Length: 356
Image: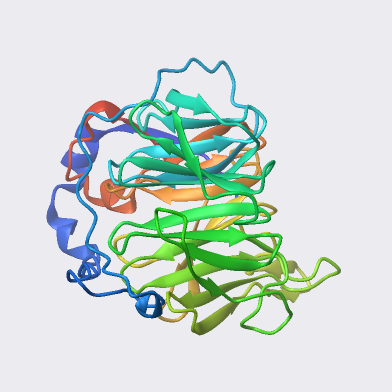
């Protein structure tokens, strides 16, 4: 493979070179999932007699305490909030950090009472998986103060958290029980998805998860058995129905192996429905078309990414990656921005690093 080089180009140059003719080349976003009507329930809540009113918009002036972090030590999980924040847990610093999307540096944050793993926001709260106390702790998005906890035993190992803002649910990957636990914002257990085992619809060594709110998918990355087993991405419906298993097995020949993945870490979906899967061993983010599960693209190389542990796609389509061993967060500008250069980037500046 030819070495990866970098070209520097301004946004103005992109507009002149490409214009707006490629606007129609970008796939249209998927139709948004309609919010549940008042009095209705999403899958898995019917037996609980829920009302499930759509969440209200949080106030615009929420903020966390400002922080000065000289160096992130062990960036782990990325999360997002209804306000569009990019959250990051640092398990060694024992902090939740809000990352500025322009500078990629922490600007706000708070300390946690134990080692933080998964993180997500919902309403005016930030939910953090506490590996030390085996809890899901809740902090206020207005100041970062601790407010409550789901309590000991809610999860054994809260490896990852995701929230669906439309149906007001929190999904927690429990690496100890090897299942996905679905909670309401008050900590009531609504349902349990999957469980330990080697069958396609069971979890062997789950590492992280992602949601597709449009298709209501729960996507769980699984290392498989640690004695040479095949990794996979397993897809479930919100109601726990097993949908499919994407195998990480690649193809091998005289020149080596290609394709596949072995150390997947969560999953993310963009507006066009493509699935992004970071592989900690390959040091890349793989992109899949869920219509066929063919791999369509990759992001990153060894050295630039080292042990990517999570990904997040923001509202502009930019891909953010937690790179654990380089101790930072990387960003790859959206393909639409690179191809069409249609929108100003505001505080993100006009200089882009384009992989060739």
